[in-house]
Length: 151
Image 1: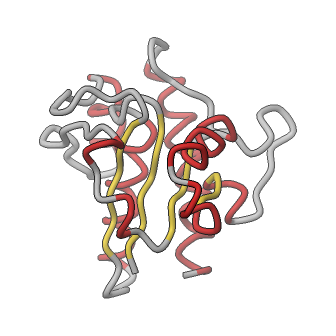
Image 2 (image 1 turned 90 degrees about the horizontal axis):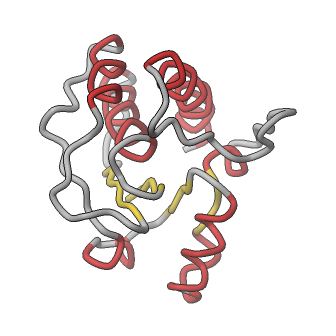
């Protein structure tokens, strides 16, 4: 199975989701699952934000070597499951790749998790303080735990 996470720049949410899921899969000894990420407006090779790097370090994850991938240069057509950070990302990806529409969800939608405030969206931490990144990472972690159970 191949899973891709998508957000805007691939330097916060999708990068953190990719790294966290890889670690969780390794810890749970789930095999034959490949994890990728990309961004709708990503600059290829861009580095993660310092706050994303610092928060992932708190999870025992080294995000320093992550490099952003623009969706147009990704291997998205090979994916079995495409998980977006927000509904607007999902709709944009469906417009770009209508043939993949049955594989495209928001992460929270796919794991049937909905918040009162943000619904099925994961709030973008870009430009905010480290506490906002921690909240975002926690939100991703909760959804990924449900994802591990589902796949």
